[in-house]
Length: 119
Image 1 (cartoon, rainbow, N blue to C red):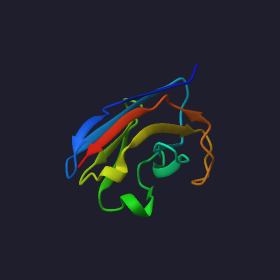
Image 2 (image 1 turned 135 degrees about the horizontal axis):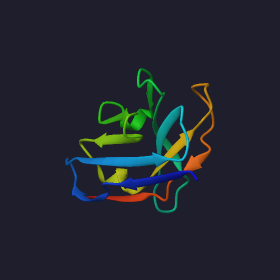
Image 3 (image 1 turned 135 degrees about the vertical axis):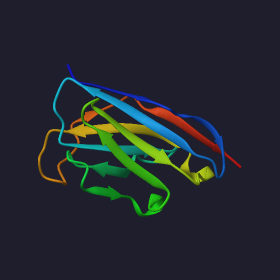
């Protein structure tokens, strides 16, 4: 059974940092990623990383501020978020795919972790 369990969300002031983690189990995943959904908005892509960790992709609005990484030995993926802004407030979701192509659609999703950035 596939499980993706996020942790690390919380309340932080603007300019602060948070590190999200996602523990994945049940499959060997190729790409792992993070998405987010703000209140009243559609879910949007944040970042993804391939199996080796050698290829990463970011949404323009997080480039230079967020860093995605993974630990295959622990089946975890992390999202280090720095210089947080109030507009980063959202539920952050971990996602995984077994597809090999770098643009493979994500098949599995976590339940999400809430990140709230105050002024």
